[in-house]
Length: 484
Image 1 (cartoon, one colour):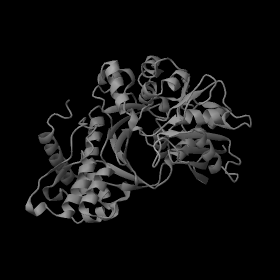
Image 2 (cartoon, rainbow, N blue to C red):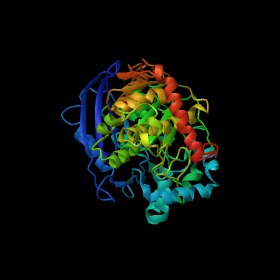
Image 3 (cartoon, one colour):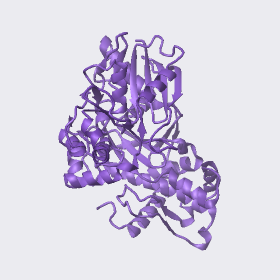
Image 4 (spheres, helix red, strand yellow):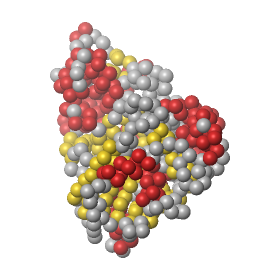
């Protein structure tokens, strides 16, 4: 069918993969970092000139990388907001990243609409500091002149697609990206302009939401540009996950998402109802404490890195000699305990050894994520297979404990930029539909990610006992936390 490209514009870099449109085989790749300049100075900024994304894209695509490419898909960092004036010029730098500045704004929005349940019913999620709707509230409160001039709102992948197409009158997005804004409902498939007004203080123009296999347009040179999507949705598409699959992501915080045929409305706010890049849904449950639990334990034990912590944990046995760590070191979202702290239970003389605490940290982190999985399972989401992502997924202590604690087959994909691959797969889909060779309802059948497969095996009963001990300590310490 041809050659397609997928680009992933993450917070730190642009990566481009060029793929065979029929098989998904990666033919060549490009990479370029993003310049980091912003309001926070050192570290990742909260304000970024979106032109930096274009510069990085141009550098990554240099050297004839895109020669022969017929279609491009765009994946980009989620939660970035690009406010434009009525002429399409940026009003201020894009608001990106976790952006803790907006924490008060999130609480304001929750109260303004009547609480968490009202938001869950409206758009399937409760405002968090990172979300676009919350950033708009922050902008209105802290930069009212910029907020007043903001006539058009776009996200990172919307803006990049629009730029690649030469800034046409028609501005588009996809349902995956729209579902993370806080003002589009995955359940109804429509925007809530009243929530934009609630946050920003006035109405604004929003991109048209197009279907998963539709093209956003064609460049003057004849290059087809697909709808684009957020990084989470693109990575899920690149991995090839489907019904029965869940993805557990191990970052500083953790997340669990699964493919489901319908949007889930969760009045507790623990589930964020996202749409995916194929027409299905991606309910997501987030924990605040994942790899940060391991790093904190390593510092406490004087261990130099996570690999050494894993080696130490492997000297212990399942159950950590009775130690149980509730890893709520930064408070917690799942369960909703924002002001709590971590708990270490089961201390006895024989359990007070470094290897047992190291093992308890791994088991506590994974049990917290198993709690998140149970939130989805409790709402009827089928989970037969779990993809485990993040650098920590390669650690022996994680791989030893995850299958028995999750109670399912665990798949550890080989490292790759699955967001860029997912964007390329979307481009192949749009190209095939335009050529009449693919069904708009069925994406190209690319081979899934190469991976290591781990089975629960004979230790499943041991894992269930460890998990039950974790749940027992959690219930003693925070009774009814999951019923609140």
